[in-house]
Image 1 (cartoon, rainbow, N blue to C red):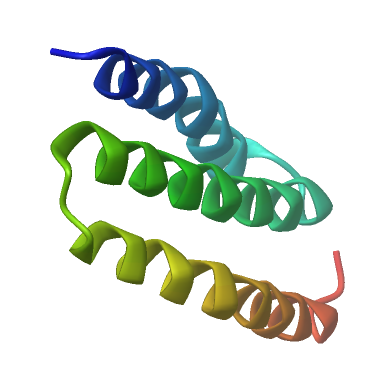
Image 2 (cartoon, one colour; image 1 turned 30 degrees about the vertical axis):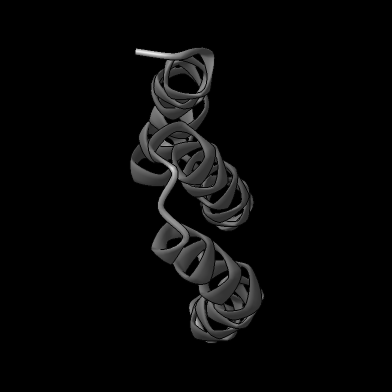
Length: 85
């Protein structure tokens, strides 16, 4: 196990875990922020896994996620805009 994989594991647990918890239990604004941050952290974890395993296919997935995540956040925001809380 090299330093890239250790860093990916730490960021995966310490960065994505709280985002998932906040996404499940937070207010609507907190859920949108957690979704955006979780997508960014996941892209970084995938890039770290690319370096750790030496596989370029993870880079393609990270780049796709980086492009599609903001659109997903906007769709989720649009969905929540119609709800009154």
